[in-house]
Length: 311
Image 1 (cartoon, rainbow, N blue to C red):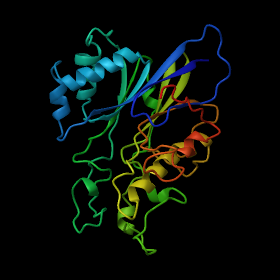
Image 2 (image 1 turned 180 degrees about the vertical axis):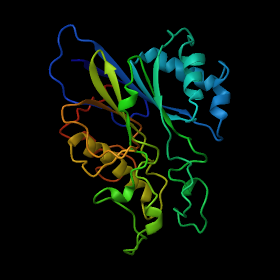
Image 3 (image 1 turned 180 degrees about the horizontal axis):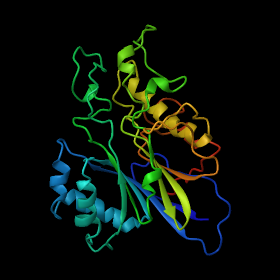
Image 4 (image 1 turned 120 degrees about the horizontal axis):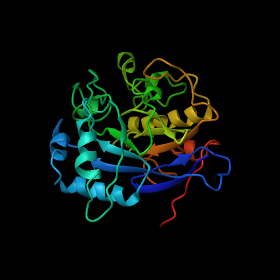
């Protein structure tokens, strides 16, 4: 059994591990980190260009932070996705594996990244401003497909054939979803046609299993939409709540309704080891999130919250 030690880098909204029995004296200590690195760009391909040389100042600062944290498993949010995985490899080769400002080089032989909904045109006027198109009408807010993506780096093998993603799960297919209405009416904010294509995940939700010396750890990675950029209908606030609920149901075993991108239904196995990672844009006390949004995880019987130790 592995003892899981949480490391918070920045923009961490929740990091949780499944309860485990007491570790043996010789157990491996596993360090896990999540980092919203803002390695997103305004145009497709720009991140690949920036990482093609080893002298991008922002990327060097991000890499140094990661090197000094020394995590065994790392999730980076806001890392633009490209189909060929060039950015993932370039950041590893030109930055992580090169000492930054005297920090020890970090070697991550394994990585996973996948497509996201940000910037993917929906074909509908989702913000009801009279026109269809642009970042507000994408399946997730973004100026191009892949913007604000994510990547998991690991020192341990990633079981890629067991990865489950929930990028295409429709928001309307969640029972009792907090779908918005036109303010002051019972009319749905979204048309029936729009609801047939609108996913719940603003980017993606990914269950990425990692083999830690024979123990499978499920890295549950996500980046729910910020609730701050909202109108009176509160569509982002509501979506953020339900994106968080997806994981809460998944680990509690109450997600029989949930289908992954391969068409398989169901929750995480009840005895599975997991860690919930990412930038969840929600706080139990502050901010603009729907009341109780993050408490769906913090109050879960399956979740242990490694409370921050600093002010």
